[in-house]
Amino acid sequence: MSRLRFNISMSLDGFVAGASQSEQDPLGVGGTQLHEWALGLAAWRERHGKEGGDVNVSNDVVEESLQNLGATVMGRNMFGGTGPWGEDPWDGWWGDDPPFRMPVFVVTHHPREPLVKEGGTTFTFVTDGIESALEQARAAAAGKDVVLSGGANIAQQYLGAGLIDEMLIHLVPVLLGDGARLFDGGVAKVGLECTRAVQAPGVTHLTYRVVGAS
Amino acid sequence: MSRLRFNISMSLDGFVAGASQSEQDPLGVGGTQLHEWALGLAAWRERHGKEGGDVNVSNDVVEESLQNLGATVMGRNMFGGTGPWGEDPWDGWWGDDPPFRMPVFVVTHHPREPLVKEGGTTFTFVTDGIESALEQARAAAAGKDVVLSGGANIAQQYLGAGLIDEMLIHLVPVLLGDGARLFDGGVAKVGLECTRAVQAPGVTHLTYRVVGAS
Image (cartoon, rainbow over all chains, first blue to last red; front, side, top):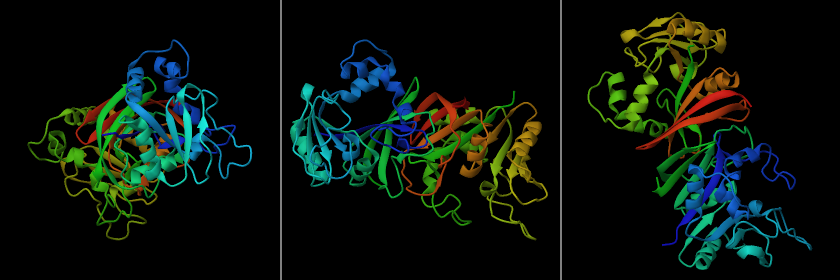
């Protein structure tokens, strides 16, 4: 059965992006600190078309998190931009050769034709809800798992709907103080079981299995 | 050097107590879930005067967290009650034989004579601030460490003042959705380093060293 896996970096105080996100500062104030643990890793560099890099326990966790994935789901905010696309729509944060290298389904209120990028990444814009996006992603994944990449808002929706099977939270020992909280008030009280905790330089990797509504 | 160590159980969504705390429900809605991992442990039972119990990896973490402690600091809310003490002041949540078995310094705005309880626990009420409470606790600890037991409000004050040396967060895989957040907006951005992550039944024990302001 194709599972929905959710991977995200979160500060110890619960933020997955800093305050004041903008086109110039997509991760918000201090938000880059959430990803510093990953930037030097061989697995990260390889995914972004670069050679070399660190091989430590985080590298194993990242490689494992990329295995058996057939499609990605993300929210509009993570693709980039807000509101109607306009006549000359922006192609988002990810450039001409995005690191996904698989079909990506972007949940949005605003219809748009699919975007085909280099390296196997296609962006399909889904306007009829998170269940539909997951169905389309599962079909595209052809038996492999689907990964939910964020951000906070869509993750809350998928978690609240009981659709996430596994969460891999990269817990980063910083306090951002403000920004986008992953678990904001009103999130559904699903049952969780921590199945693994891996301590690594600058990050703790926590794997949770979602075991149903509590 | 006597260190200030902070031990607390926190939900994955960042709460150290549930909503609507009251004298009848001191941990708030759902708050008891934060402590279920500990209740069956031999180390916990022994501290509360009971025999038997589970001996697992959490037991080791709890025993270690109780070693080399000479005094406890806590906030008024954790002692019990709010506002002026009144003519017949309540003795708080902890009963005649509190589990601390050491001098406890309660930070409060309202002066009160010390309380002597069974088993070595004395409560001293400190009205001139967190630094004074820590100084008094250090003097009482006579070279041993001081433990800060919570709650959220006083922990934020000590953390913000750069006075905490080590945090042991027992991260519990539940989502409370509301309550008292340990890391609420405006907390000081201290530097943290996770030095240990221990996965155990129903809890992940995360040790952080505070390495100074970032």
